[in-house]
Length: 247
Image (cartoon, rainbow, N blue to C red; front, side):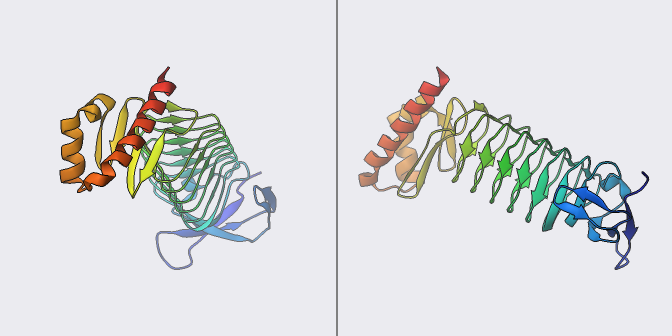
């Protein structure tokens, strides 16, 4: 069917605005002949095949929007060698970079960041201020939201919902890792064997060493002695939940 859009240089910059050369039905509905869309650096950024379209936002560098994917957000940036394809939808002020891939029926919105070699697929949703990076995979019907950070070699699948300030570095999770918040202090499992408190991440065995824990919590974290009991009880909960999930 030939080209479905042309490039319009509106400001003399290296970015070109796209303008539809024919009427077609995209993920958001009808794209009319002559309709102006978002911005690209070249035709390599947006395929002429399928119904993919950039309504608002930018695809630059070597990023590719393909198949029937849809971008609609004035703050959306797809850069690097990122790929957005399938029936994926990206909205808001999302930043996708590196070698990240968003595909399937995935939705990415809010001010989420997808980077590294991360893959977002299936019918998963990454929203709010969530970050997915490294070689992490988010798939199936999962939801990553809030200020969650998924990184490393983590795999989030099934109907898992990860929210709040959770940090996941590795492991395969079908339910959210155990987490506790006590008087502003977060205790969270970040992998199948590691537990994070503050900026310190160690095994349960390390934390169980009273010398290690009390020195760290009372000296480095400046936690009053009367709060120790609550934090230790919260830690016991996180540790026991983590042991159960390893079985």
